[in-house]
Image (cartoon, rainbow, N blue to C red; front, side, top):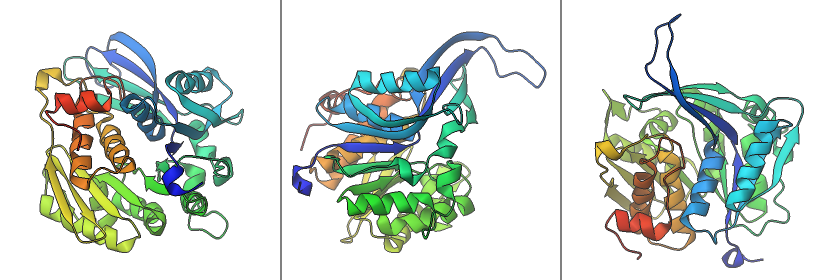
Length: 337
């Protein structure tokens, strides 16, 4: 099957459960806060992008690759994936650890969230769990380097397991994209720099590009656009990507291998309509990857990415308010190219 005949995404790596608890206040140590509501949702970068992609276009094939526990959380994630149309056959199971989960504490009055993460099965995920031999998808979206104990370590002759997976994907004629975590710069460089020669696209936020390039891109909470562009260019030159995109609250910058630079502004959302910013980065990536997959020009891809991110802000969960492509564009006052 040729690349032009392929369609769809493989979302591999971080699959987890978010246990969301709404609380009336953030307490001091040894004090009490009242839980006013709770729910269980899927989480993790691979889950989020896969669900967003299916919501954007219900005809888009999406496959999942990850490792779940033999527990109720694992059952929940498999059924959740299947219900929205994601193929879960490579969501493997193990009794060696519990399914990865995050306890999310969200203060109702402020919307501020605090996360308590248990890596669980994500720490046991290895390149052996990834099989691309029969796939008809076109793009592998992989995450999150730096947060998976086994994959972060050297794997056979490769610098780490992420490199091994990316090499396997390229051998299977897949395009590759990787999602990063906003962790300390030295750690992100150690794990992620070896991946750059095996990537086709890289879509990150302002903190992450600064970490990769070892340059400060955010000062006193304000994004330095010039430094983001310079950092993106440096990272582009260190790898084999066609493009590097950097998003931040006010906008985004994209640099390409043929020397072009694109910029766009975020879609404004009234503060009273914002449920949470968690998941907005995954939504941005989903919008941009969808547009690139469908052959849209880069500028239009950036605009769709902002529109999808804006739609995601209206929910207190990571994927709850993302809608289809045309609805996202309509809310942002945009049209298809």
